Image 1: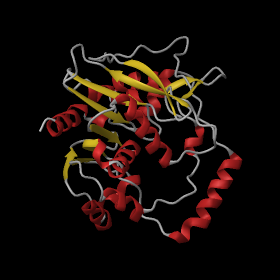
Image 2: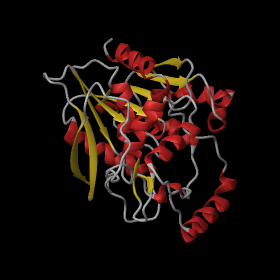
Image 3: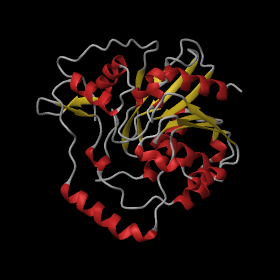
Length: 306
């Protein structure tokens, strides 16, 4: 899947301080895209940044522009997103993301500990990986990668039925007439998003849909419900194996999808992390690296340079 520009794209007013390049790797039978921000001199530090659900690697541009220019930042597009290939199946599984990350790191950072930054779904994947291969992670920054609300086994029959029905029905991406409309949609979803940021993201989040319009750069199958429930106990068993220091960053403004993170049950979950510190980004929602990229970059820099 390639996010190519339409014939008459908008010209964003945002000018990146650092330009990125693209690298493509064959990972587990799929061609995956990695966005690379390379310093002009030998890198003082390499970090791997993992984007969230319905997002792309270019989403980290504003944060990268606030990080030290001597740092190397590598951000893959997850399978089925951005310029990475789609899977041949009809849904996506968390174990595949973990396995992709495992093999991507073998190529990108083959030796030593890795500094990971993950947002939302990417934060969840990074946190699981840090517990599954604890010796491979030096430090971990989780940006609002909260996990999911607790579930009960009794929901399993309904969840499987929903999955089967959604596979039969299929999913489609919404069509847009222009990049400006894509930018407007992004701002409607996040009123804090600056217009120049929205214009920049619209170029990387959308592609021609073959019908004269545009669609988001994502496989519609990502919208199909997962047949398996989120199992809190299994996630916590993995978290307990993490030995790397963890910085757990949350947004001040919580949307309805993340209200469960304000409960006592959720606060108890976080006790599974052996070495963790917490930070909150003021005046930011879930897309905190868009809302306050300077604050987020400062937290990351201070944590990694310690």
